[in-house]
Length: 134
Length: 65
Image 1 (cartoon, rainbow over the protein chains, first blue to last red):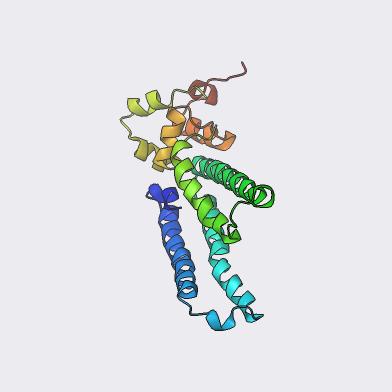
Image 2: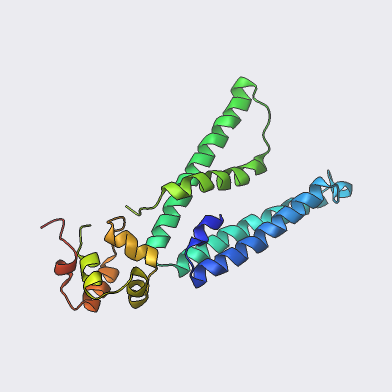
């Protein structure tokens, strides 16, 4: 996700700061959850609030990316959109295939939240290869 | 899209960074234009033509004509 910021522009710098803030929050809540900080509410209605809190930084990250695109020039905007679409397409295809594998072939269960780190892992591989807006 | 952007820039001893600043775009955008990895919008094409005081057709080759 930080590969977007390689250009040293105000928009790029804002994107880095926002990304670090949102991902820092995401990782902190995830680590606290794994560490058992929220064990007392698991299985209770309040756990839905925790689920939304953990997921909120993802929405924030998408906002940061859209803001970056809005504040960038047309080439950066076009390439970023292309990188996102390809990454999202590959991530959805792979995760759907795994889901069908669970349904039809007895594949081990993969938690739904894995789609987000999977998307960024794919983005990290795909982005360096997409350097043209054409 | 084929263009004479690099030639026009080098004639003036401008770097890609300087041209980008003059146009209000990133150095990456200038590089992408010069290497034909980005087709400019009509707005950007006119801005480039105005900066070099040339008609658009003298900067960018018309792919349809």
